Amino acid sequence: FGSSCRLRSLRSHRPTCDQKSVANVANAMATRTGLTLSQEAFLVLPQAIQAPSARQAGRSSIATSSNPSTLLPTAGVAVAAAAVTAAGVRRKTSRLARRATGSASERRGAEPVTARAAVTDQLVTSVDPSLGPQGTYQVGIDFKNWLQSADEELKVDGLRVEGHVPAWLRGYLVHAGPAKFEFGDDEFVDWVDGQAMLYRLKIGEEECQYQNRWLDTWNHRMHKEAGRIAVRETCSRPSLPNFFERFMYLFSPPNNENGNLHISQIAGSRCISMSVGSACLEFDLETMDTFGKVPFDDELVEGGPLIFHAEPHVDKTTGEWVTCAIQLRISPEDMGLKPEYVVFSVEPDCSKELGAPVKRRLIRRISTEYPSPVHTIGLTEKYIVMIQIPYPLNWDGMLNAEAKWLMNGVYEGNLNDYNTWEPERGTTIRIINRETGEETGVFQTDPFFFFHVINSFEEGDIVNLDVVCYNEPPVGFPLRQARSGDVEDWRGGGGEVRRFAMDLRTGECTCTGWPDNCFDEPKINPKVDGVRQRFSWGVIDDNGMLRLTKQDHETHEVFKWEGQDVSRELPWQPVFVPEPYSDKEDAGVVMSFVRDQPTGNSFCIVLDAATMTEKARIHFPEGHHIPLHGHGTFIRA
Image (cartoon, rainbow, N blue to C red; front, top):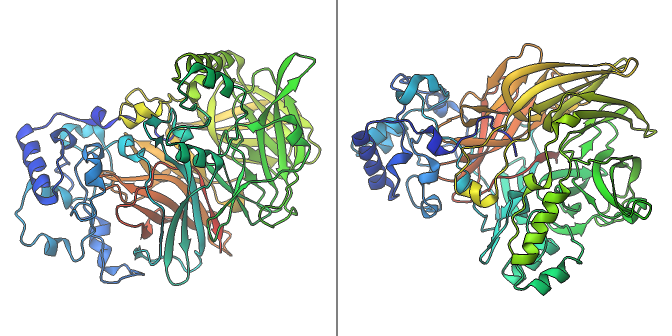
């Protein structure tokens, strides 16, 4: 989940400062909130920031949909989120965890003026490490609390809304994500093994509704019933007491039910949740009930399970659902496994009935000696653009991890152990004809790693590809290490935007870059999907904190969410929703779940995509924890 270029733990952001002042602030916080906070969690805000923020000055003029008398006075809390104890984060009655009503001066009327009061009056909207210890507060990313398991399912009507939700914005914002990381005394090895939770924000005519539900899978039921890790996950193995049981389990085929990363729709209405190592799981959008695996009925079933699915790409015009995966076919001739890329689609005219059989259209098989994961693909009017990076499956690493588990019952493999970086191979970009399956062009480039394609489009004989590139794979962390906050060695995160122009006539490939913009999780207006775009929206790393941004690919300008309080507000996985009946590329909104790090509360921000200014905040139930989640989509009502 790479989205911060120089991601560091809170510890790496800690400047030296006056210890007496820090102690005073910590004591004041403990007195006012009942929370015990480490003095090391506090940093000094810049003295230069004195003017009230736009959000503070204009709050009373913003229409509030749910309760006009409830206003949100902004308070930048100078406390590192990792220092807030789990009990403090969930304490629904604490002042820190509660949004008070009335003006800031009314709330503070009888309270003493302390360093704490001075700090919370400031909205921190920029990060400038050059100002030194007396400069801008830097909070970093609190993985320790962000990666705690969710513990409840909720359905709540009448969410509190600040600002004004556009009248045309009606529908469902849906995300999936890993949300349960331990059963009994067992803890999963990697984040991607966390059991899938669905999150749905319903925006209606009169009110907003929030609901989250576990994806009801065979894997989750087995773990829950056993009270331990009971079945195989992508990077975790079951907790079995003796060698014989583990040996026999090696012959049990995986069931692969844990769709915790990607949300999409086939046939324009059937909702699918899937993951890198998971089958496609179907659920009902209105009830959030799980229907189980999509019952595929086609020739691909005979070749064995598909792994490492790319995030599906849905054609904006036809509704065709396109993806690719790796299939390890048994080859009698080769006396072993024959890895292949399988590129396939689901036509829009397949049955819309939930649970009905689905026939996939095989577009192309590509044999390869070094299959590597494909996270996203590009789609133009005629072509599928697939990137094969030099990060092949590491058979030795996987077998070694399996052998250690067999001998001692401890599995230590994670996604980094499953692949090996081999830059000498270079990166291959394949242009595949959507209709015939022909490989129209195969282009070799310098090695790069990637997660996300921004867009691809045709101009005559040239196919252009915009992609977020990394010089090498970002460092991955086992779940236990990430939850401990020990992430100072992280490299990578946000990458460099590059445009590859591939001439199908001459076979030439040129590349232009946008260096040092530290960008990822890109989204574009779906109206320009497959044609030349000017803008994209995503997140950048801003000296250790994630910022929602708009990127201008013509001028290389970057526009940040103006009102974000970078001392506490952590956005993730934005979704672009276009304004109906408008031809302007940046007409629409950007929506993102945002975590308030000191309290652990979350809200959905709705930004004007053109100006990156705040239109509304939709607050989720207080004290409700939403862990680090995967990709989402907006489905119109």
